[in-house]
Image (cartoon, rainbow, N blue to C red; front, top):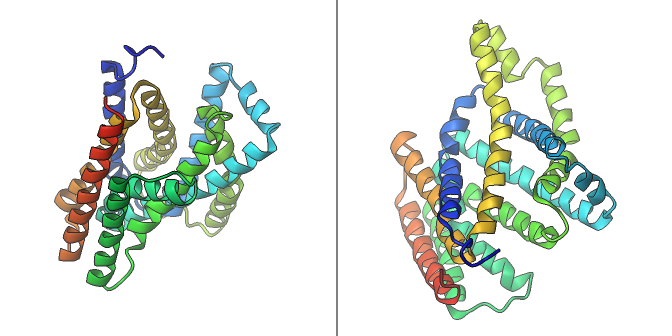
Length: 306
């Protein structure tokens, strides 16, 4: 890619649109009641996989899946990635649908700090002093929240942990696994488990569609709910494809700055729209996280100027 193409207005537009879309996800998932979090994940995975297969077929790139299936190590890593992203999705959807959107936002604020920590401990990359300071602020924030809340904020910790390990694996296969083909394989790896759960749910008459039918909902309401469930999978894949495109058009420093858009929006949605309570410990923890993010961003801009 030529220097003029990097950080182009098109790249900025796609990058901002991607993170704004992620920021609005809590509003979308709040519309999916009475579906439970895991049922939403079933639809998110199944219809996301279907959309990936359609894209691969239309673009005549289905051969990429066949080529990847010959790489046993890559397939195994993608399957593990599928496990981590499944857990990440489940925690996130559960949080939004159970009044923990604020915790989810805090989790995504912590994510860059945890990613840096894994780079130093797992990938054995040498951390700069500012990066080390930023990570320590993240640790301090978690300690403050645990002490102040009297419990472990598992959503705020589980989300970045699962996504950071997912990103770590995706980094390992980034040179061998095309984006859509890789997503298709990692989603296909967890789909049998999800379909098994959905079959059990349907057997007991407990899917959201069955519940709506028993409540006497109209056909329009039931079909609208079904389309929202289908849309959750398609929307997930479309936004991930947008992110992949933005990653090719923007440098690391700009990508790092844009990643704060979504959790800021989610925090505002949680507090202002869902009216979730913010205890003092959460405010203090958020402040410490933001100090760490400022340090991390300054270090990134210093080493990778736009």
